[in-house]
Image (tube, rainbow, N blue to C red; front, side, top):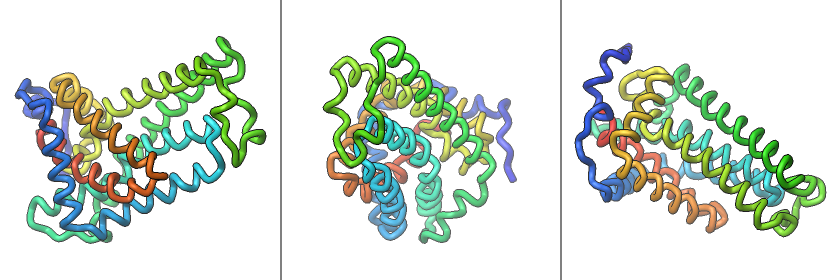
Amino acid sequence: MTILHSRSMPSHRANRTDHIAFGEPLRWLSLGLRDFRRAPAVGIAYGLLVTLMGWLVFALGDHPYFIAAAASGFLLIGPILGAGLVESSRAMETGGKPTFDTSLRGFNGNSGALQRFAFALLAIAIVWLALSTSILIATMGPIAPRIEETLWDSAVRFMTSDQLIAWAAIGGVLAVISFSISVIAVPLIIDKKASAGEAMRGSLRAVSRHPFACAAWALLIVLLTAIGFATALVGLIVIYPVLGHASWHAYRALGK
């Protein structure tokens, strides 16, 4: 097994200042769509998994805690589950024909690092939930009605505009942090057998070296994910795997 030591990182593209155009993420997205078309069964399988998990959460209602759980879950599960799609794109790049079974190699061969990376994302989500609850309760009182009062009903109508803005802003901070440590983390783990720490540091370096390209990539992810949510998550059946495949091509541009 190849071990990626920190002293080998200077050769990593994320440590150099090679210019990546602001519009380059559109090419990554195009390549992700191409990979999805090459192995649609694999992509749809992962898309359905994400969509079904989302439906399970939102079936309970739109209480802010459920929405926060869904958003945190997507930030946590999205990059990790995407390991199978990254492995598939990696295989296609070398002429392979991936199946759902072969995509699982992305998990099986890198389970330790992926688990530690998942724990890091989980820790960020827990801290965010704890801080947001504490801050909003301290400054505005309860941020939402009790769950049992809004189960199967709309909770947003119970919240003030200030509460909604503050709650969404704190969630935005979580999203920025999660994106910054994960933009190329999973592909780096799979491709270079990097540890979770090395993968997160590699992602942070990629963002610091190519902030405009990474910002454009983050914007595309947010817009496409919003479309997925706006379609009652049905759109994620296709959007999620396309983004998962595209993350491999983002890594190829940002991370080697």
